[in-house]
Image 1 (tube, rainbow, N blue to C red):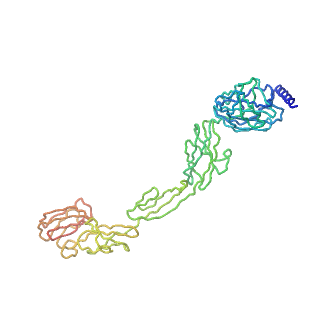
Image 2: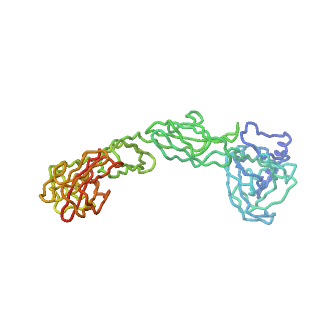
Image 3: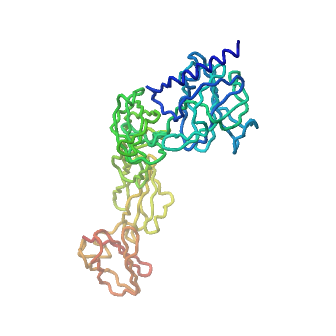
Length: 496
């Protein structure tokens, strides 16, 4: 009874060929062309198939045993393998050097089985197929059969396995060309000529901007960026931006908002890739803060990338701990003011700044600290230039140098025109006449500024009257000291 059924099936296959039955209408996939159906033939024990060496990269997307192979109800059994032998085995010298790519069992009759099998150029792909009971469709052209994948030529060759794949996946294969090769519908897609961008990323995210980046296989002339609220469909909605280079700065975003975005490549007019996978980011809050701080006179304040030494208002952008969201800070910087004015009453100098620490200095001796002179007031015991260093609130500043002129014998200040030393005109604007009211023997002269710097010296002075020329020097007070043996005469010149 079993054998009769098989022969009856053979009759049906031949009858089907006579009708020329074929049905590919309405298929959105591309099928590798195969020869016309000649007759149906059952193989009770083995499983036939077809193999080929891929001429290009492509993806197998669908498989079907032609309907001419059966009655109209038998389930399909299909096994896709990769042949790993450099030279495929010639049956019946069976080889087990195969990799199983996909096994399909009990699939509905005459229904394309959707698969997703990437194939690389040069790989040897085999497809074993039979309907339940061994049904198959043969073509009169035999194998090898010259066909095509896209514009590339592919040669379909015969494949066999000693295994009945109705029981399970094949473990062995062999190749023998037949005069009437098996027919198998293989559907495929080629890689798009314009490849979609990948590896989307976002960086340098601010309140209203984000820097978008991606990788691109192949060559793209331009990219279309589409963005909107999370979950949007780029095929239906979204705002667009066009980029000609990467990374791309996306602007005019809402602060503290979530965005999804896609990108697709434009390789040429009319040649656009599919949309990329989705990526997302969140913009920052508009963070703005104000702070105030104080530095000491002559101090330095580090504010972000700025080094500040003067009072004023400054703005700086600071990156967050994650390096994405930044904030702007406004600084009002002031300099602590220390009153360095010194008032003078005779030999007594008084610092105007109150409630501070004081150290009086000798300007004529490289600002040497005067021992014990740490009060707000200082009474000079010799003629000279004196300053005070004032410390308060963690800051220090130093006054200018103030002159004190004492009469050498009495220890009291000389009169403005000098009791023993007369200077005129004083103030003056150039040449001053100096008259010493005591005879001079081998006197020496020293002229200094208020910083204690020596401007002029003379020796072997014998005349009681001589001139000092301040022409070309800055306006201010200059100190004059004349030493003759044990006697010292001091006075000051005011250049106006």
